[in-house]
Image 1: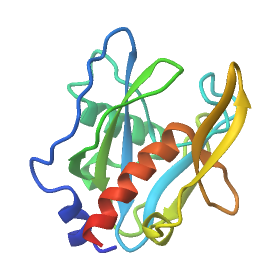
Image 2: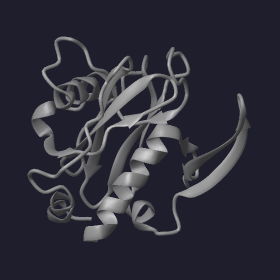
Image 3: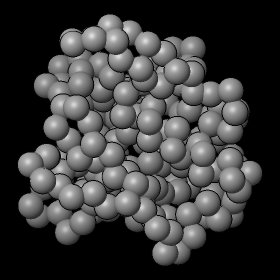
Image 4: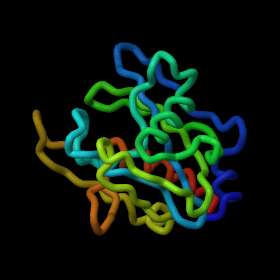
Length: 185
């Protein structure tokens, strides 16, 4: 997808649901899209205390000094993958998402330039990779899976990738992104 098409998916003033924070921990992720390529994802270090080894977007806890979820997502992306905030064009936000581990996530959608230079922080990120737009735009994906976990049978989305299992909050945010992009593709 070209940059102009991606901008059309998130026009200025695009409405999103901002949920009440309550007792949850505020977090922000950067949904960084590279035109003609796809969405950048990380595989978290197995040494991380929260969600070790899982596929995620660059992001994390919103700190008191962060002016907004956008600022937090850019700060975290700089820390985790070396993304220079001046190279990022924020397009907007998607609906907030709450996960069972107590985080309230604000997904910040952005464009990054083609062939953007990135360098993962090895203490936080074991791998950096792209989920291509061809996968996001394919109406056959994601796939709904079931598994027994804790108190019973759970259903969750899984995106296909030859090297990674993309599930959980990342899969749901990608599903929402895919539905939005399919409207303009």
